Amino acid sequence: MPSIQAAQPVTNRLLGALPSKDREQLLSHCEQVHLNFAEVVYRVGEVIPYVYFPTGSSISLVSPVNGGGGLEEGLIGNEGMLGITLMLGVDVAPFQALVHGAGPALRITPSSFLRELKQSPALLRELKRYLYVSIRQLSQTAVCSHFHAVEARLARWLLMTQDRAHSDTFHITHIFLAYLLGVRRVGVTKAANSLQQQKLICYHRGDITILDRAGLEAVSCGCYQAEKQTYETIMH
Image (cartoon, rainbow, N blue to C red; front, side):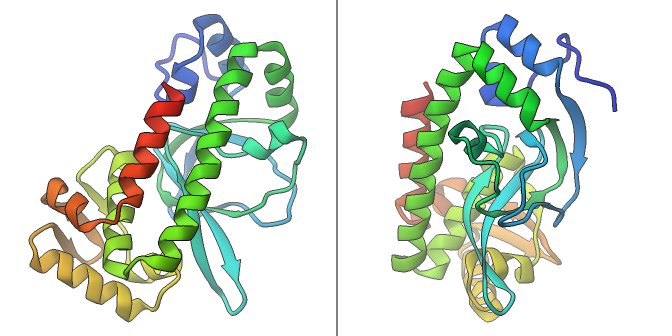
């Protein structure tokens, strides 16, 4: 695939925050790829093949559970990157990376990424901040999964997905939602029906439309605003 030229618009917020010289240098080693829905990008314990900077896609970080289930621990869209552990000297994936929002992304080999990291203090500084944000998201999700009701967690997840999809409508099935939230399908169905009855969302055959974002934020637990505030404070 052809490399990404510097003149091409950057839609990843981490890359967009870099000085133009550093950004152009990094982009010269990137290639654009299309990520497909439900595609497994990383598997737990395997060597990281590429670093990804989503531009129009989103990736779930899932911890598999014995018996075939799983639990989403984090969500990455164009505000972040996948492969952050490389900057810690660890090239083994700690999560299963599962595409839940199909679309484009930029990717770069680990060797090229680490080389650019050494040559660009601005990139290193930006990714150190993002590493902190990622750790906070993981800890917030752990708290949320343990203490909060399914309906509030679903509302939070829908808000996070809308932020990364940059659209009021996106496609997701109850089965996939149940897998990501680590609950039974019947629990997701009940929560989704409740949100629909409150006219906060419209759900039909896997297509979800956010009708009332303010109302959805009111139903969501405080974890959504906490994560959003952390990102805005640290990354800005």
